[in-house]
Amino acid sequence: MKNINYLILTGFLMLGFSSCSDFLELPSETNLTSATFFQSQSDFEKAVNGTYAPLRGLFNSGGNAATGSWLMGEMHSDNTRYKYNPNFRATIDQENVADFTVIPTNSAVLNKYRGYYLVIARANQVLSSIDGVTFDPAAKDNLKGQALFLRALSYFDLVQYFGKLPLHLVPSTSLDDVALPLSEVDVIYDQIIADATEAASLLPGKADQELGRATSGAAKTLLGNVHVVLKNWSAAETILKEVVNSGEYALVANYGDVFLTSNKNNSESVFEVQYRQGQDGYSSNFVYSFFPMPITAGELTETMANYGVAPAAVNGLVQQGYNIPSPEIIAAYEADDERKAASIGTAKAGGVDYPFILKYLHPHATAGLTDDNWPIYRYAEVLLLLAEALDEQGKSAEALPFLNQVRGRAGLSDIISTSGLRDAIFNERRVELAFENKRWLDLVRTGRAVAVMTAFGASVKANPENYYFPAGQAPVPSAFTSIDLTFPLPADEALLSPNF
Image 1: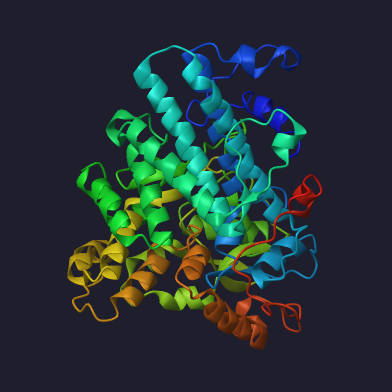
Image 2: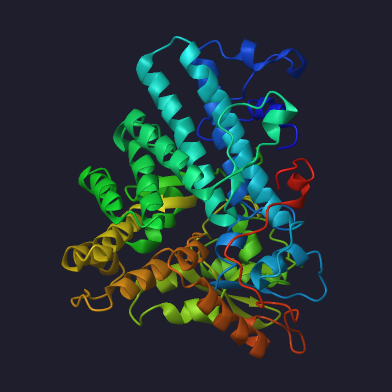
């Protein structure tokens, strides 16, 4: 991790994600060291705020959209595609993610890797120092728990996408510390479980925590997700039932209301990345990458107006549209499923109607500076993870009520039969959590990735116009020829380490 100590220190100069109206005032960077900085509770609060900050970049769209985690979570699946624009070719890395032609120099891969290791580096700095400073014990537990949660969340995402990784648990103070060997996957998972378990014991519940910050419920949900991935079904059931029985969470009555910017951190929110519209650097902008492009200012204005959005001075978008819902995800919704209309809209681009992700389009004052948060965990997923854990243990009848809570909110009838319940839960996850970066990881952990993506790739290559290619254009011939279950470690990082 290049210049890790510099990244740790500069991280503290960033504004906190939920205290983003308060500027952090510190001495000159030339006089600042971790030894002199950490002196009080306030110092650790600022440091923890800085630990959250990289999440905004990981889930947002930067430059040509190469920073979006949705590239690897959604476009690397059968849920979404890109709208190929032959007149804008600064998009090869993004296309390669979608087409399974990823190489180690891919910028999206590098940005995810470095973004999460920046979170980890900042968490390590907090955790290495916090027990040596005396201040209010409850506040210390809260801050320590947040750092542990963020480190566990980061490693959980990284290990699922990359497999073996260097396991950094203390601040790097020398080149030897930076170039650690790759740890085995089971060792990384053991650390994730340890961190999430301790975080759950230290963090307050949702009612007692500042909005947007990690809670005991978030740590338990993360832990339950880890156990589901590892097929520790009984352990998953136990911890997820603690979340359900806490009484701190409930489904929002209307699915579309879950994502309203006026309803952030609602009763269903377990953990979400915080954004704030405006010119101060905290806004989101991912929905502007999700429109089909090229799209004129008039077409974009009309599309937004159709959904009650009217930011000032909308300009046309001439690059390339990403995360365009595929025909497969559109067909996955049952006829009466209310989630479809809340999740997928229609935008006219070049006089042609295209689907686009609607669930993140809400009123905002300035074009390109939106107010939408990104959901990491929602209570609906807790219910579906618990249903899965029960069904996999042969407790299918017990699983049905949790599955049917989610279906009922969507306006669908209850599933009564336990026959084929595994597939029913899997399909329910797809439509409930569509466009929330769950699909690729679900395909991998359930053993479906190779078969599903091979068939999907064959459809794309046979009928490229159905997947938003102009007539006469198609994916590269090598697309979908190898369905790897993990991404390559970044080449830029390999240059810094003999262990890659």
